[in-house]
Image (tube, rainbow, N blue to C red; front, top):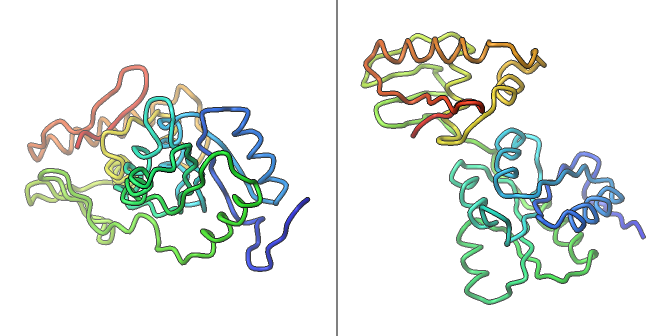
Length: 238
């Protein structure tokens, strides 16, 4: 039976499920969609991190499994909290030991739900998390890495005190990569985020802007910080 909440308008709530058991992920997605939530899911920690970095501004809640292939749920949580992403996280776990719960809470988990669980209890936990006041995500004024400083307010970039003159797209591209240090981004992801439109898959607009950024960084004797990951895309080396 579909429940209702007089406090929240579920139509405007977007939830990400991170669960490696696809049948369970699909089951939870269907159930939450019946409650009028907008839901997507990912099956691994790496896929989830990439999705969150690209969609953090529109996400309202993450349902995160503890045991995931590759990166664990706790590792995913630490990674996104280190980037100042404050989306509420409800962790699903088969572990109910006090020590494990404390580790999770210290890593930035907001609430726990031990498997097996009642779907109605999950809905109640979700409503409780969504009612909590939440600070704005990505509250960055300055991004720093070594001698490189990018100020998001003044829109200026300096290396060892020398100002680097960047175009709007060059600045946005550098800012985007710096916010997720050592994270590899495909060209298509960068195009979607920075240019906000669908370019032809073979467009070299990203490569051209990376080349220009490298040239301007080299002019101020910067070390190599924009790395090409062959066949994939680019990353900012912290």
